[in-house]
Amino acid sequence: MEDGAPLETVRGWLCAAHRIAVLTGAGISAESGVPTFRDAQTGYWAQFRAEDMATEEGFRAHPGRVWGWYQHRRQMLAGVQPNAGHRALAEFARRHPGRLTLITQNVDGLHQRAGSTDVLCLHGDLMEDRFLDVPRACCHPDTVEAGSPPHCPRCGNMLRPGVVWFGENLPLRTLEAAQQAARACDLMLVVGTAGAVYPAAGLARIARDAGARVAIVNPQPTELDAVAHMVLRGTAAQVLPVLLAPAGSGGDNGPVPATP
Ligand code: OAD
Image (cartoon, rainbow, N blue to C red; front, top):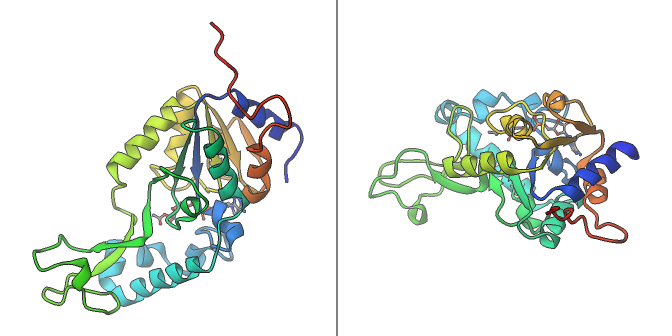
């Protein structure tokens, strides 16, 4: 884990920042036991093609297979817990109401289970379902027929997971709120994302162009390293508790009061 000067530097930025935006990706959940997408060995996209498992076309072609994969991921999530990285973010936000905006690409709900509220979930929620096609009068989530996937018994409209697939739009209000937080922040922390998927990855550039400091927490190089002012090479569960811990004395990571 990176320690010493870079971490202390980012801690200084954090203490001085009035508004902090945090963008997280799959890496923050890795130490909870949730696979990432792009790890060369254990990542989901090392085992499956994203086109098959994370597009509408893939779902329509093999609905049972794709539904089964999301069911497997849901069951896996029931057996894992938020880690020290999730908890550090939730605790910081509790200590500093209104100062931190948490934006995540993750659909695993672990930030919320750690106690974070008002999380901007750019890619939806794995635990939610919705109908694949525009629901007709006969389509009701409470009366679906069991199956893989469950479907409307009258018209066959299938349930699908409430996540954003490739080629689909992100939820507009959530994206706009995230972009606004990126423009308004003094510091953006980018944690556990390869920075390969847009528009989420573009938030770091928006923040930098608007004058914010950008710091990355990641054990590996990312596509956003060049956008960052500082890269902390460590894992989320190692770095975030130290970075976000209350100051030992004389304060609590509070922003420096504005000088008149
Ligand atoms: P990726 O799997 O692309 O990247 C995970 C990142 O986490 C990599 O940069 C790793 O180095 C880093 N990492 C691994 N372990 C870590 C740890 N313990 N602490 C900190 N970082 C760690 O995941 P995302 O960037 O989140 O989209 O992927 C973005 C999107 O692509 C996902 O939301 C998903 C995927 O396809 C959809 O499904 C729409």
